[in-house]
Image (tube, rainbow, N blue to C red; front, side, top):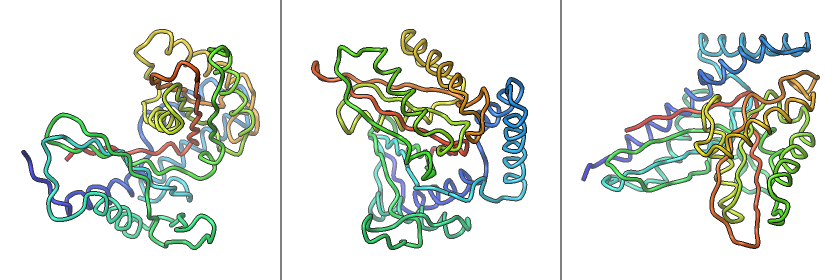
Length: 280
């Protein structure tokens, strides 16, 4: 058994919040660079080069890559041999978000009551997904999720008979409806299977996978390739202004489901595809 104090959790989450917002992941930067090489639209190519420059400036000047520093989503993989001491685990995570957004000078974008719409002024509450895993460590992945792309995400229960073609149609329809509102080039996370709640969770987990990394199952990997090709054929392009690079990547996660159902969820991530993982 290994003891981890809540203060360590708070500090880790805090640092991860501002690092995620300042430093765009290497796989996304590489995706921009590859897209800029192949982009057919001169305007689209110019936009992609501006995104690359923006990411470089944000990292050098320690400033947010995007003004929308998002709803803070935290994935916590907690080792079953860890003992949390000194306080409440979830409150420690929320305190980390508060500390990180204040000390990192990040925009507070969260309202406490979705109808009264009063800003909490500390970007809490964040959304925390916790998974118990083997070992004596905790892995935190902080995902600042921008409002524009999240708003354009969608979920639907298909009939099982609609099959793969039904899944593809729903994904493409969702991307076409989003257009430029999701701030492309986007990363597309697709969840297939599970329940009403599970399918949206795995769709969000899918966007954490690195650009260039396919699913282990060959038929799912093939579907990822087909969807990426179809999405880029829409012509939406960078920032919705036309072009051949609407999406950098499509990742799919699956889960077993009921014989009567074929749930599908599409979680869109904008070009500010920020994420930061730390193990303590």
